[in-house]
Length: 358
Image 1 (cartoon, rainbow, N blue to C red):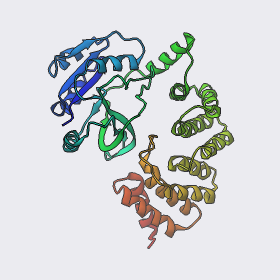
Image 2: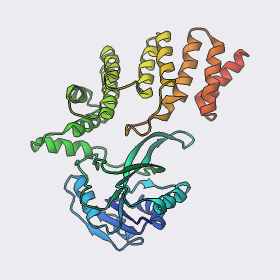
Image 3: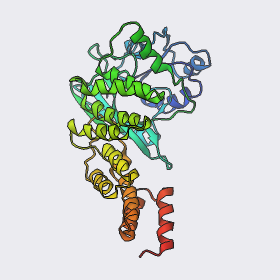
C-alpha cells in the first residue's frame, strides 16, 4: 500500500484548518504543516493533528514554501492541500482503494479540483491538479504564484475530487503584488506567469493593462494551449468591459486558432450574438456548444454547465425571441433535466405554463 505525507503551507488559517485536517487526517500516514507567519491560533490547531510543524519565513514565493514542506516528508508520496480545501467523506473509500492499488511505478496522481458550486452544491467549475507526487527530488514546485509541478513520468488520472471551499476571504491583492514586485526587481515572467499576471490584472479591473499582457501572450510562440484558449476568454471579457465589442468577438474567435471549439468559448460567442439580437447566429453557437465533447483530461478549466445546461437554457431564450414557443419550451425542459432546481428553468416553466404551450 502506498503511504502518503500530507504537506501543507499555512498562515492565519484558524477558521479553515481543523475542517481541512478532519477531512483527511485518518487517511494519510503523516501530516507536515509549514507555517509562514501565523499570528492567530493556526499553530495551536495544527498541533492537535501533528507534531511535525515547521516555521518557514515567507519570501513572496509559494513554490519555495511548498518545496520546503515536501522536503520534510518521509512517505512514498507527497499530497498537498490548501487549508480551505476539504475531501468529502464520499471520496474516502476511493481514496483508500487507490492507496491500496497504486503501483510503485506511478509518479503523479491527478485528481479533480472543484472550486465553484451551483445553488444545489454541484460543482460548476473544476479542473485536474497534480495531487499525489512521488517523494523524490525530481518533482519540485515552480512559480512564485499559481505554483505547479509540471507533470512527467507515469501520470495517472483519478476520479477522486477535492473541494475548495473558503469560509473567509483572503488577501485579494497578494498575488498581484507578488507579480508587480517580481517585475520591479527586473525578473522576466515566463509564459505561464504572464498568463496568470493578466488574470490578476483582470480581477483588479485593470482591463487595459490586462489586454496588453494577454495580447502579448497570445501572439507569443510560447505557452500552453489550454492557457491560450482561456486567455482568449478572459481577454475578450476585458474588451467588453472597455466597450470594445468587436475586439471582444474577434478575440473569442481567435481561440479557434489553437484547437477545436470549446463549449465555454462557444457559449460566450453565443451570448455575444444573443445580446446583439442576432438570434440565428446565437442559436448556431449554442448548438455548437451542445455538440462539443468535454475533455476533462485536457488540464484546462472546465465549466460543466457550458456543455448542456447553459446552451439549452439560452436556446430556449433564442427560440422564444424568434417566436418558436414550442421549441423554446422543449429546450427549457431539457435544461430542467440537467438542473430541475434551477430558478431560471422554473421561471421559464411557469412562463410556458401560463401561455399554455402544449
